[in-house]
Amino acid sequence: MPKVKSLDELRSLREQVKEEISTRIETGTTIIVGMGTCGIAAGARDTMQAILRELDKLQITAHVRTVGCIGMCAREPLVDIEQAGKPRVTYGNVTVDMVPRLIQEHLKNGRVVEEWVVGRKTTDEIGL
Image (cartoon, rainbow, N blue to C red; front, side, top):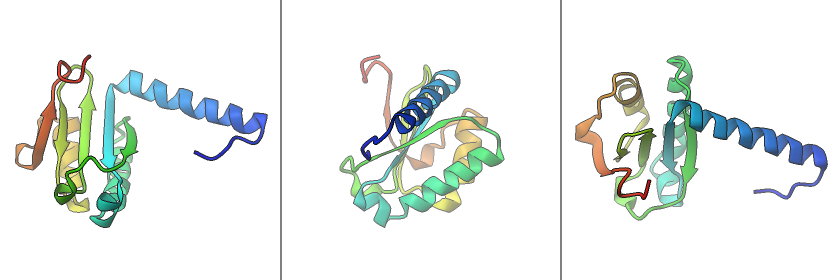
């Protein structure tokens, strides 16, 4: 994160963080895109942009964030979807072409796209 050089920058950062927290609380949905060098090389930037476009197109509010490498480089781009009260689902090898179905099925219809799942984590497993 860049250094904050003025009070106005600090206020702006504060508002941005408040908005992000509010989105997470209100929607209960977070989409996490692996953006380590392995993910970027596999097309994660394009995948993330496609996710943002699809969310906007379908008017779905979700918090989208990035993380570094988690060690499953062969399965990049990795996309995790966390929803309140549901297991965290990790999808592997997510290309731009897969994004519309992923968002429609998982977020709109509430159905996990089983053939793309590479992992799950229940709230019990993550200490919630």
